[in-house]
Image (cartoon, rainbow, N blue to C red; front, side, top):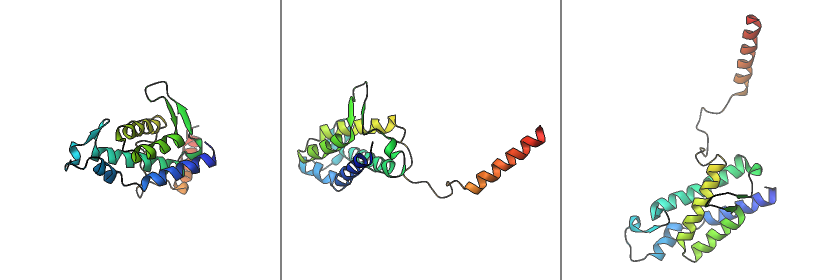
Length: 154
C-alpha cells in the first residue's frame, strides 16, 4: 500500500472507533435486555463488539508501528473470504452499521480478521511489555562474545 492508502485506511479506522457499536446493536434490538441473547453471524453481541474493536485496534497498530506500508491495501483470497479491499471494506462496515445490518458487519469483521491472520499480526501484542525491548549494546556484546569463542575454537 502507499502512504495515501494507509492514511485513508487509518481515517476509516478512526471513524469506526468513534461509533458506539454496542449502543447501535441495543437500538436494533430494543426488546432484548440480555445482550448475550442477541446473535448475528458467528457471534453473540458482546463477543462481536470485542472482536470488532480488536480487529480495528490491531489493524491500526500494524499500520502505524508494524508492517504498515508493506501490507497490501487489497488482496484476493482463493477461499470464502474472496477479495479484501481495506478502504472499501471499512467503508462498508460504516454503511452497514448505519443500516443496522450487523450480520453483514460480522461477515466483514471475519474477513478482516482473516486478513490479519494471513499477514501474521492477529495475535501480535499491541505494545511490548516492559523488559522485552532489545538492548542493542547487549546484542553487540553477545556478538563479540560469540566471535571470541569462534576464534578460540579455530
